[in-house]
Length: 160
Image (cartoon, rainbow, N blue to C red; front, side, top):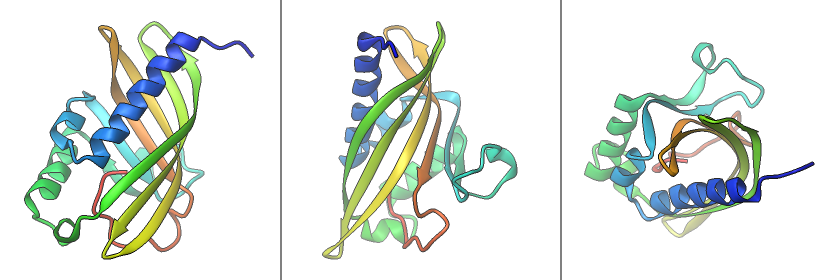
């Protein structure tokens, strides 16, 4: 297997930047990381691939992402009233496809949330479709495949 280490470093940096924004509640800047057509998806079924025709915990287009951020920033939802602190740990970044316009990558994520003195972890595989824009990327799709998506998920007050 041959790898393009420069591209891998750029993608890893982008994924780390996104995680840092979310951990530090930089939601407006996070919104700027997306293409207008981008989709944020958290499927309920780990085996699903047809996200538009299956049940999802989240399937957000640009308008839904903006509404989700507004609820988190303004406390307009029950879950936003008790927003905890998060730390995401991203690892095992792998380039699956690399074209002139689009890069498809996958990584492992463990999101740790501390709320009301309780620590909860959410392990997941995350798949990105990144559109090349200038010398960087914009997310065209982000799919968060939570290992326990089909089990009990307490009130989620963050973006995965």
